[in-house]
Image (tube, rainbow, N blue to C red; front, top):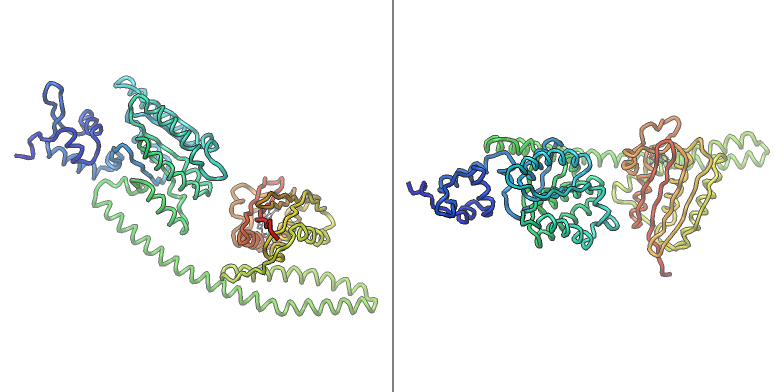
Length: 505
Ligand code: ADP
């Protein structure tokens, strides 16, 4: 009997349910929560039964109303599987009559703008209309990104202004942001995590609810586990993908968790098994390339002996054949060396013999060497670095050789290769530009992976193992530099790398 007495004021009800008073009033007003108005001022009172019912329905409801406590300063993250459920969830979150700020990707923004306008116009006929401020991620990013990271001062300057404007009429502010998801998709994981931290800092000063959303498929690699956890930790509430959160009872959810646990377990076992197999394969490759190297080295030595013997005897035709044989042996040696290098990288045995050396000297030597292998192409050098670097001279030479030979190999119909050199006090930049087959945008990000060869590269026309760029990237990165490509299909490519320069010595 006692439970039915209307005992709870708005404040007490808010404490009981762990939400704020405004939320209780809104629920009561929308008749989501049954209450009674008492006194001249019409203050709400609620029974404990009704509050318990509300708590239960919140817990079991599959909608975001249940998932998202309507606290003032929540920071949610939703990992969604398809766009439709993202739009629905964001709509549900935003269309509450509060002021709304949206910073979304182009494709989502248009849909959201449309559906939110509908909601907000409806609202205009009822109570009153909240503010609605919408940005495109691409437009807003450059306003606060500096060198690939969000600059705190610029970010706060910009967002403080927007939040203050949105809350000017005393309304609560709700923000839907996809800037972090965009940075993540671009591979700027550090930038995304830093931005999440900045949002949290902003929330210490201003009161707003923030809804972040990332597509679940952006986390499909083993190495994403740690940053995924970091992202979850930076949020006050995590919403799993819709295939889970749409389940409508506790029982269904528990079953789903059990199924997911089984899947995770079997995947872990499978990954371990594959890592073991991969290791065996690498060891095998190491042994094979090592065993191949010895006979090929002696084959090369005998070829050279025979060649000079024929030359001395005046048998120039045979000497010429042997010179051709020598070229083929060099190619074979190159392939074997690449295979050996890869197994060394994989086994953590890739060693460098480091010293100080002039970068320009190595470039000149390699250009001269590679120029001798082609009659069709002319290698033009522009600029100079005039810097010493500390590293493995031969390995850096190997990277330059690789980029130059690729530029020749993949531009059979062009006749110019441009090498550019420049430097500032911290780093030097080396680049090789060709006017050849080029590489499509979606293949560019894979070029530096082991065994990767762009599609459309025919083995007969462009033979190779897809290892040179992988090894080059390893060398550059181990020297503290960066390597990248800019390219347009059928127009040509520019491969560049940086190296830190040594100003002393
Ligand atoms: P390989 O040339 O032996 O295949 P690399 O690792 O050097 O191996 O290159 C990987 C792939 O990158 C190549 O198969 C080719 O598809 C692409 N590639 C490399 N350099 C160029 C270039 N200059 N122009 C166009 N495609 C290139």
